[in-house]
Length: 179
Image (tube, rainbow, N blue to C red; front, side, top):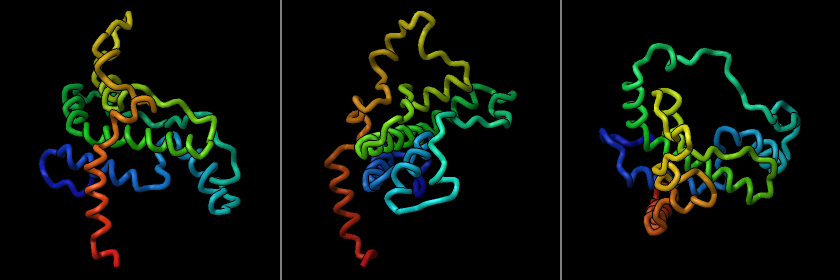
């Protein structure tokens, strides 16, 4: 979301960022890094050797041995406010994860890690603010029916408007700076 100078990030700025992501042949997002590099980038570019191309894709998720500073005495209300302020960035991150997963799937890459169904801003709220999204009996109807889960079946919900992207792409391709 770089370049956003206003105090709040607008819906148009989020959609512009999503449209720009669509222009990439391959979006690489977090847990899909190894799959993208080892199964697409290395073969595509005939890269060999080194730790990125020759080692198999790890099935284990990287776990940091460092303590989490946000879990050590930071006020959950302050963290919740910060998470809400960054919500557009979380939305863009979720969209990048979906695009990355879809692009790898479209290239025939298998054994991809599962996508987290919960939107990342909600997942972060749960982790740091003692917020509960799903009740103990899993009957939280709001989450189950109103909040779109991060899945390929729901990708259309996360796409920016087609007309908006087409207009932005027309503007970008007519820019004389590229000549």
